Image (cartoon, rainbow, N blue to C red; front, side, top):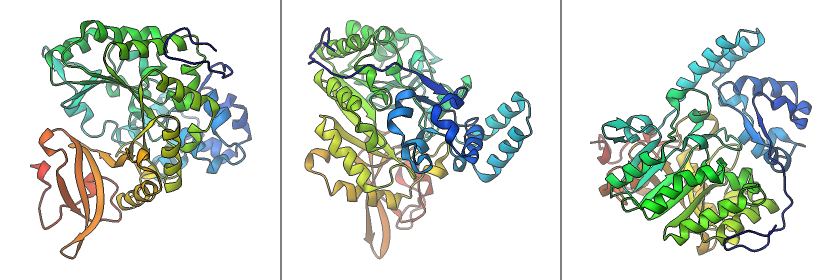
Length: 441
């Protein structure tokens, strides 16, 4: 395919027609019929709480159907029994088996969802800003420099990662959902907040939108140049779950042209790409998509959480980081799995997370050591597990803020007692006999 515009070379990737499988059509997946009945039953039950969606690309090219139960992408996409507590699973499964009315099943699913901390780190209570005295539900402003915007047409993904901390966007409950369909609300807010330098379009996945709709949100920034915005970011997993979006979709060239226009207008363009496993980077289409994005001058930054059953292996991360660098992308973050959704199924203890990061980090060149982690996106900010050390005969976690609600906290070192079972900031106790961490005051 020859691009119609932009800084592009010829791309030889065969087109593939897009199809999405959802909870309602999951049984039409050809490989699904061959799964054991107990896996069928588990998926049917848990998908009422953690919704299922997957593109035909994910189904056909990323999952090893000869061993699905052990396959990381299968575990990542298809709801698993262990994602619910035994009590909640048995309660919901018994109602499914009994043929209870749909309204009863939905009520039981909602009860379980409300227990799963649908909006962690104070997203709903602390991050949602106001403009003219009115709350802007489709926006978050946690850190001084960065505003997150949730375009209403982009609150879905090509496939749902079951670990996703944005799972509440997908369960069909409006009270749990962030979304805004008014580009002018963003412009007005940016004009009134000159401290903001970065706009992050997020979701869901904003790049699932057509290029025409993406332009509706981006072009006002290019034309009106509100406030002091210097960077435009898109949080996306499209390169992993539907790379043809950048290659052969009917508006792929127009999307690439829009990226060119953003850069030509003097803005830094960052594609915040989520890659959870090295397999997502191995297909020809994924490699071509990343190279095409890089060819525009966009900065492709790669991030993912560390999650049990999927990528809690140093060699997975080493391979991901090395592959990303070879494609011109930048390893950016290893996150700690957030305290939401099926966190007990996916969580890795902080001490083990530090070991995995350090082992992988020690095996790559300096070009891949742009990555930061393990990092917790907690209520006060992004907290880095910077080390495990011993002071005064006490084993400790060395921690510091990479980003914070209060900018004065950034890069400040603090210590917590080592706890081999701790998986999140709230599990930790201050060191040296302190009653509280300094930021809790």
